[in-house]
Image 1 (cartoon, rainbow, N blue to C red):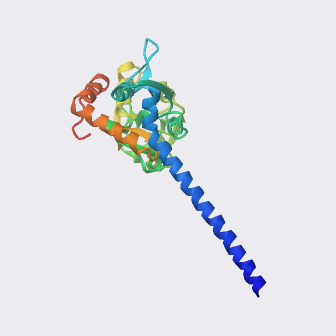
Image 2 (cartoon, rainbow, N blue to C red):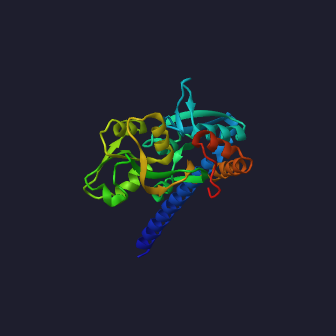
Image 3 (cartoon, rainbow, N blue to C red):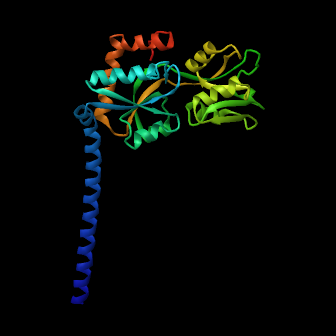
Length: 274
C-alpha cells in the first residue's frame, strides 16, 4: 500500500509540474504578444517609418498618377498620419484580396485602403474611427430597369473579389444572378465598360470616376447595397497604435484637414455624420 501511495504521489506531482509549465508557457505567450503589440507604435517612432498598405487601382482612393507616383484619398490620409507621427511613410500597394493578410502578417503597420467594417473582418483586425464616406451599390445603364436585388434575375454583375460589394451582394442576389468576380478593380471596371456584364457592383466614388472617364457606356446607381464608411485597419489588440490613429483622425476632422482631402478627391465636403 505504501508503494502504491508513493507512486500516486509521484504521478500527481509530475502532473502538477506539467500543468504549471503549460500555464506559465501560455502566460509567457500572451505577455509576449501583448508586449509586441504595445511596442508597434514605439517601433514606428524609433524606425522613423510608417508602413501603410494602400490601393493602387481604386481611384480616387488610390491609383498611379501621370508622374508614376501613388495618389488619392488614401495616400493623402496615410501621409497625414505619418506626418502627425513625425515619421516617413512607406506606401505598400495592395489589392482588396490581400490587404488584410498584409496587416496580419506584419508586412504593414496600417491598412488604409477604402476598408469597410464587417463582423468577419473584426474577428481578425481592429478598426479606427471612420475617415472617409463611402457607400456600395449596383450601377448600370440608365435604360436598365433594375431597382433592387430581386431584379437581378438572369443578370451578370461585375464585382471585385473579396470586396465589401462581393460579400454583401452574395447574400442578397438571387440564385439566377451571376456574380462575375475579378481580381482587381481595373478588371472589374473594364468588364462592365466593354459590355461583358450587364451591371457593376462598386462604390459610389468609383462609379462617379468611371462615369467621368468615359462616355462609352452610361452609368447610374440602381440600388444601394450598404453604407460603409472607410476605416483604418490596425492589427488585432494593438491598442496604443489605434488610439493614436483615432486621435489624429479626430484632430484632422476638427481642424479641417480631413475635409480638404474629401474636397480634393471626392469633390464633396466631409459629411457631418461621419
